[in-house]
Image (cartoon, rainbow, N blue to C red; front, side):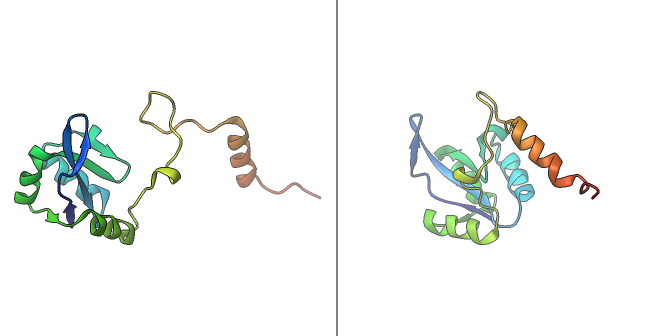
Amino acid sequence: MILVDEPLWPARGHLWSHLVSDLSYAELHVFAEMLGAPRRAFDRDHYDIPAHRFRSALWLGATLLPSRDLAARLRASGLRRPKHLHAARAPGSRAPAAPTAPAAAADDRSTAAPAAP
């Protein structure tokens, strides 16, 4: 189910809503595309949508919830990706940073066969 909260969040001179799915990211991306939200509006587990798209989201079938309930439903679905657990990002990039040498070495050790006695 697609969920949306009221546009109460100020940023860059506008008010914004959060658009989430409690089913899957695929459902969320398809809905956001129908709404006309650019992919860059996706932030870890939700889309930030401007107030002028809010009524369209409701018209397309999003369920209006208070922000607190929307966040609770997202957590209960297992789709919540909090900032503090999100992968580190390379400066100026939206892609996860490449693992550091010690992390890569640790990954190699975890899949290597045990040494012979």
